[in-house]
Image (tube, rainbow, N blue to C red; front, side, top):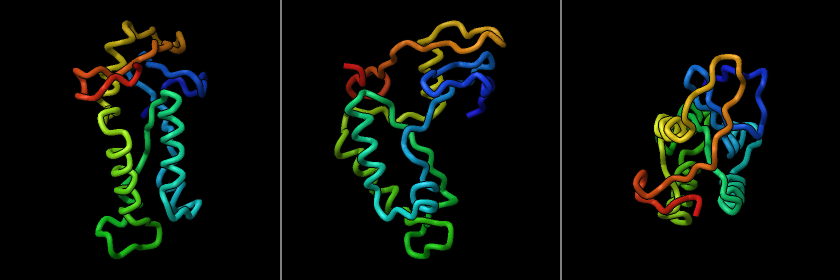
Length: 147
């Protein structure tokens, strides 16, 4: 997502910009980094990090790109990893965390945050700290992530 206040960015601050952008940190390693740069052959790192995030009440957000996935499942080219690894992560999430997560699109998360945080600050005023935000049953059919 665009970073309108990149020069003031803090790794611990979630914020909403004056232009209406919501910046969310990705909390799991990107697929390209994990499978193509680090040459990992399993989803163990993703699963361990996901479990740690869940234990600490955090948000899991992953950045993947179809250009790096061997989508047909059989012919893997240079610069691709088997799509089965991504499917394995999704299956793990569905089985381990059934009913405990909100599989939201970025625009849904942005709308939820904008609704919860109220007025957006004027340009140049810095960050707007967000309150603790949970996902309730009316949004996803899942249990609240905060309690």
